[in-house]
Image (cartoon, one colour):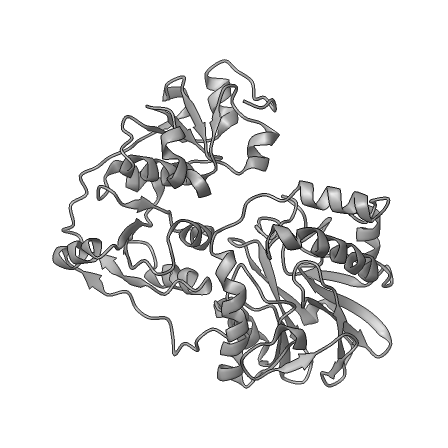
Length: 448
């Protein structure tokens, strides 16, 4: 076949900041790379192109989502391609450095690229001797490299130095070789904000600051300096992917729960997650419920804030899709979604949700990530990341204006604080620049 850009279909998950790929092999078959358990978009792309997924390749044991490879093997008969060093506990073709797979006209060559994980492989796609592109997973990503601290602080330096060698190995490929990473902007596996999702080797040699580092020590300092926090569920998913996610017959449906069932769930240690928009939660909600608006980032915050073994009842608006919520939960291995609340559940609590011009002058609590806060914040703001707020609720100032970049995370934070006993909170509908302008101030980068 003559490979063109049209044969490569990126499948972006904007919420997790990741990209899977569907490669049309030109003969009715396709290769999927780093597909997540939420296969809806990838399979829709396959149907549009009238191809069957015959191969499912995983670059590494993912920490931020459950792999869809096992499901593809069940549903389409796909051959799973993955690192032999990953010791996966389900049928797959284990590959090592330099191993090749004939895709029928194209060839996939495995390149050992440890760093993000020990067993990480990049997959170089070849048309005869010509390097078309490389699926780099969590090694070389656009203008950066994926984080190297997921196996614990005792391994970080070792893996960072392995990542240095892996990036320089990939950078030795021809300039016009495509760079097709899994992790991209918005991924907590680390990527600069606002960058493109794909690139070329030549562009990365020119633009990637990590490849410009003068030596391995400088590379290590630069990469580790940019590592922020990451969701709690990352610590369990790599092992879940090694064992292999359970095959699903379809997305389970959320049954409707009555008031008695909800009371029983709460008495058993369950949780109510209110997935309605922040404004709807503010206008009236079940006291003690956790606000996590259903959007692209829903899975991230569900997995970060709610333990995987906690049964959850959800509150949804009439125009929200329960299947979308379930798909996001199951994508990160969250399968304790018990049902959704019906209309008679009392929603007696409210939370002030106001634009910058109507909010009080302070105190101001910023719950964004550390990198966001450092880039510019309201002078005098108290900073506690949302992911750790439950354990630091006592650090939040009384009667605070709770803020993030737009309002969704701030409403989640307010719901955490309210059930910890805080009252008189105001959630900012907007971001720090709007608040500062409304109150005659300018953003600062100085530490509070």
